[in-house]
Length: 381
Ligand code: AMP
Image 1 (cartoon, rainbow, N blue to C red):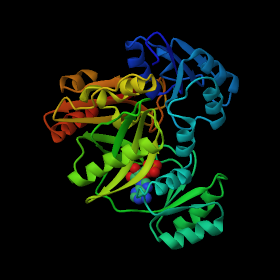
Image 2 (cartoon, protein in one colour):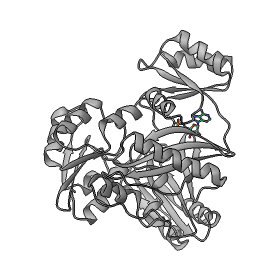
Image 3 (cartoon, rainbow, N blue to C red):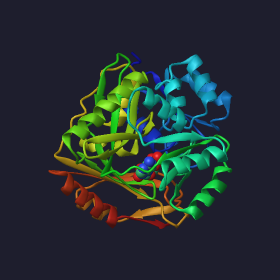
Image 4 (cartoon, rainbow, N blue to C red):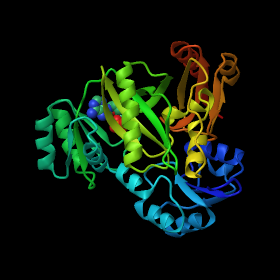
């Protein structure tokens, strides 16, 4: 067991790192954060801040030396930095799971081996393979960069000859390859956040239902709607993945649901935006659970504390200056909880904060969270 008083290292300084640092500090751990300098929300909560690029292997070594366990808050940590850390101190989740989720094609091969359904697709490394895949899967087809995609980035929809031609141009801009995927019908998107401890104990929160806008998460509702069988299957799939990947910590499995069927869309070996509402809505938040798991402590209950909950993201708009949030009083008066990540500058689509609401039902929680988010605005200071 890595007990309070020890130091937890975090690779990455975004809002996920910041929200991990909060329960870590509450429980009496020291926190060391490695993040590129600049507007990194987690740095302000760190006892030790290492401002360096993830490519800086000396910085990774330094983090490993000062930490008793190291984790990461985004999955694009360079493999070499992960290996350097893992040679010196436990890296949780392990570097194998990290590497696997860094490449969509490897991720899908792993899911195929486990017999878990995904959207039909294949890897494409040449234009010939690309064209053949578009013919094979028909239109609409999605092309997704094998590596580095985030929040719908690196994706393109092929629906007709002009978008196919544009896709061919896009194809040539990346050398790591692509995954070409049939578009599948779905009634809803859900995610299962699953925690696994060093001892192999697994806990999941009930599935979250997610609505995206422009590829970015907009709204999460809890509990998810859908058939009991589909939701039970989603949880079972997440448990299988956690076990097979020898997960230690928290990870997120995103799925498409159609009737009783589920297909995995993607994996993230870290705390996840769709789990933010667990801070208020569950007996143990995803952030505290992750800290417990990576420190070898017993996991907490993932039970909900209310009949329903909802979360709405607050995204940056076109105003790229320093911003201030207006309307906090109104949002709080509606009964919502307001989270701001302390980012100084806004960019379109940048996640600046979120609001959470608890209520007797999911519908009511969604109503409150949307009203609260609607009363908030980010305005140039
Ligand atoms: P991703 O970056 O893979 O999570 O994709 C972003 C969003 O695009 C997803 O949340 C879905 O709404 C949509 N999407 C991705 N892949 C597919 C697919 N194969 N079929 C239908 N919709 C998809």
